[in-house]
Every structure is written in structure tokens, then in C-alpha cells.
Image (cartoon, rainbow, N blue to C red; front, side, top):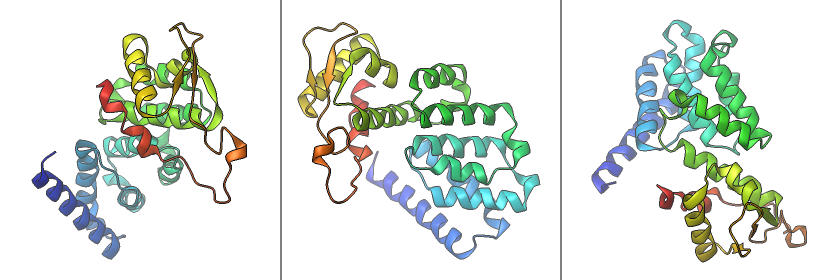
Amino acid sequence: MGIETQKQQSSVAEAVEQLVAVNPYNPDILPDLENYVNEQVSSQTYSLDANLCLLRLYQFEPERLSTQIVARILVKALMAMPAPDFSLCLFLIPERVQMEEQFKTLIVLSHYLETARFRQFWDEAAKSRHIVEAVPGFEHAIQAYALHVLSLSYQKVPRSVLAEAINIEGLSLDKFLEHQATNSGWILEKGQGRGQLIFLPQNEFNHPELKKSTADSIPLDHITRIFPILS
């Protein structure tokens, strides 16, 4: 991404933030907020505040509601997990809209992620590619969330469980594991069978004896940096 493009994106974001701050209930800013959702999709950026503002305005102007825009907002909210953004957005969406097939699917996907049922999640997402693949970066964001969950829960994890959680197999998984072993402190048991164990770095959640006095979370940005190598 060039410096000029970054400046343009920053300028758009600042303009929208100003609109939201000054006119949060003015329906005249609806087109700007809708355009900004599409900008978030194309530039792989995210603004929960702007999206919540748009959903609130749709409540006052239901005839102007765009289901395509709402779907994109919800997909971006899923990508923000473990933040509770999806529930915050869903609360502002009318029940009649939630009953549409694409939104029922997104609600199911959210439930699978919240309950760490990753195999079911990836199976359902594969059936709904037209919804989730409309938003670039979706797969990598969910893989990062899955790794986040595993890192909180396990000191060591079988290769098969990891593969299922992040939906990567074969040579791509080998490449990913090698990268993690070299750069992130993962330790790989010898062999590459499904039962191969991967030892994850210690943290205060998977090793309670390391717990600190302050509840620090594991930064997701450390995880998201690794996925471009798989592209």
C-alpha cells in the first residue's frame, strides 16, 4: 500500500469520524456511512463506531436499509472477535431483517465461533462463500481468532486439532508450523502425523502459575502478522 493511498484512507476515516461526532442522528450522513463500510471492506480497515452509527440511523430510516451493507458490517464484526462487536451490531438490526437467510447464516457462524466449534464453523462458511468472501481478510482474521482461543486453552495441541481449528492442511500447514517454530517459540514434536504434538508458548492462561496481577490479553496483532506467509 502506497503512502498516498494511506493518506487518502486516513483522510476518509477522519472525515467520517467527524460526521459521526457532530451529526450522529442526521440521516443525511447515511450515504457517507454506507460508502465508508465499502471503504473498510476494500482497504481492510474497521470502524465499529461508524458502523454502529449507521445501524442506528437505519432504525430511524428503515426504508433506506441496505441488506448488503448490513451483511458486510456483520462480517467485519465477526472478524473482530473476540471483541463482542457482532452482538452489539446485531442488537441494532430489526428482527425481520435477521430472519433473512444470509443473516441467519451469520448468526450461526457467530455461535460456532463463540463456542469454539471451529470444524462446524469452517464447514458452514464453505457453504456461504458468497457472503464471507465478499470481505477480504475474513479467513485470516478467523484463523487468528482460532489461534487466540487455542493459546488460551492449551499448553500442547495435537496437529489434527490445530489443523481443524485454522482450516489448514498438508504442505501449507507444514510451512505454517515451521514459521511458528522459527519465529514464535512453538516446539514441534518429531514426525508429521495427525497425532504430532505442538507445544505452545507459555502464557498466564495456559500456565496459570504465570498469571500476573493485571489481566493482560494476548495481542491478536502478533498472530495476524503470520498469516500473509500462507497467501
